[in-house]
Length: 452
Image 1 (cartoon, rainbow, N blue to C red):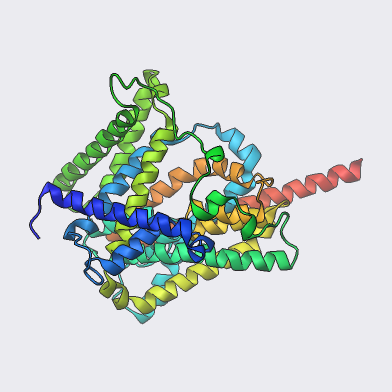
Image 2 (image 1 turned 90 degrees about the vertical axis):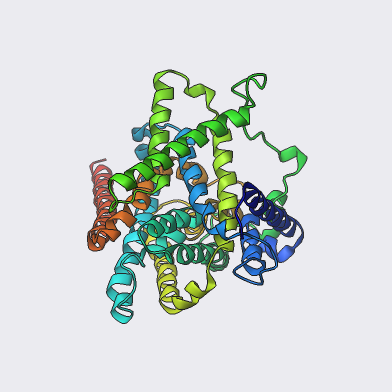
């Protein structure tokens, strides 16, 4: 197929059509509602079945596999502009347990997946790539966005199969999030472990159908510049666009100067955005950037990324790695179940089930899955789980971005065992610190009770 700018328009037009079809299916088909399947995922599945990797009924170009790399750079560029600033002391004082649980759950999944692949899978399939274990966390804890980032990074480092494998992992993760979550909720309700319990029929209409009633609609942002000068949305998109372009330019220059060190564009786009945000703060112009609008730009790019990412999965690659990939994903599910059932109750004195079911959705699927599961067991959000996680995620985000950015580079340079041991060590140290402080706190309480 010959390339022209219209090729890109046709690709985005087709994926837009599939997203609208996915939205219609979510709004009208009950089984789709009960599974909480996002319209973007439905669009990707339709694109995979009907597109060039399936029945070849939709005239997608060969470029659809490259779009996720561009879109993830845009997503990463939005993060510094849309993040709230909260003092670290306030975070540790209020949500220390939530941070420890979520941080260790995330980073141990990265290290655990690597350890399982290096020790078990490579023993059976000796020709597996040293980074095969990253496929687990890049799809589960990371989701389709991180899967695209990891796949793009490894493609630049010579492992092209990584993208299809990571996207498959993310798709399995979303399905596991809701199906496994519903099983855990039924298990918890039957054994009286839930503090508040609801049923699917009692969920708000917008969570089931994806369509928000008039009385529940909220603005997606505020105008910080006059449309006489420039449209407010265009102003924010331009900020994200120039940041992403700078990240890409630095990536290409870096690749020319250091051919053996391929730094992904999304990583540099994030760093450039951090610098831009700092300049805005120093010049006291940061209040002209509306965090909600930037967040919506990132959310929109993520939806398109998911659709293109799933549609571009190369099925022969998935078939080639079917057995080791299945074992890796099963290990990941077992890991998340153990964290939920065994470790979770030890972390939280109140509402442990609600907090853990939210973390289950986050560790296997997406934030949307987490919220959907939480609303089933805590319809009025009385456990404050969502508020606490929002605070706890602030120090988690830099760690996650660092892992995603550095892991492919370290593994490609032969430092796969270093990465594995560091991630496992950090996760275990965090949990050990929590255990020690909890023991000290309990002793202090007992001592206080005896003295009184």
